[in-house]
Image (cartoon, rainbow, N blue to C red):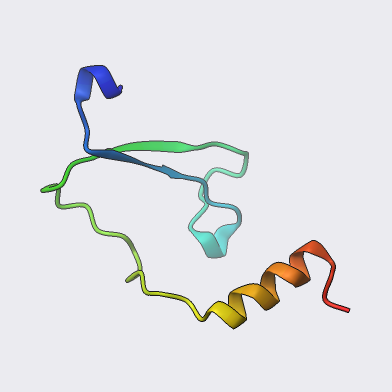
Length: 66
């Protein structure tokens, strides 16, 4: 894809569960070639997260939150 389509980048998307917009209920990935001037927009507006909150969630995921 990279050599043929020459994108500026890729999005690799996996949705798990209806709340995450999954419509086909098995594991699959979407590989989306992206270009600097393409019209595709994310369904959310990215912004910086709170470092302390991110660290707390990471600890909880690792099971080291106490």
